[in-house]
Length: 144
Image 1 (cartoon, rainbow, N blue to C red):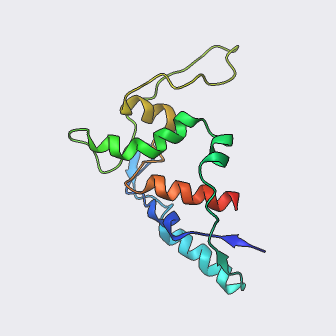
Image 2 (spheres, one colour; image 1 turned 45 degrees about the horizontal axis):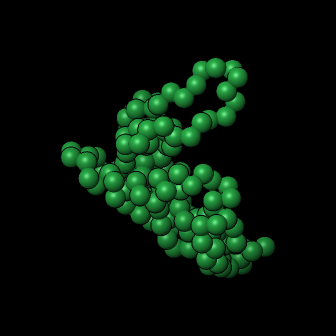
């Protein structure tokens, strides 16, 4: 069995998580990855670093505007006054209620708050400073 991992994947370390209407400590932390890596090692499985694939394979799966959002969201979040420690949506643009609309149209919001609600969709995935780098390495790991 081959296993791929890049240390940058551990950079996405959430500070907060919404569960049952309460902000709680997140469970999807780098320590979880460390436990998985230790389990692989106990079974003699050595991880390999992923190959760099660039964005082309990612863009074959994800909309370019979504990828651009992930790449720029942290910098844009830093421009907001009185922002929280992570980029988190506080509005969720409603896109359709019609049964004939089976797929989501392109993102309509142009501002950071509307886009957070559009692309993240809930409060379980805050975006931190290293989210883009971690996400990109995770994509490369999946592709490898």
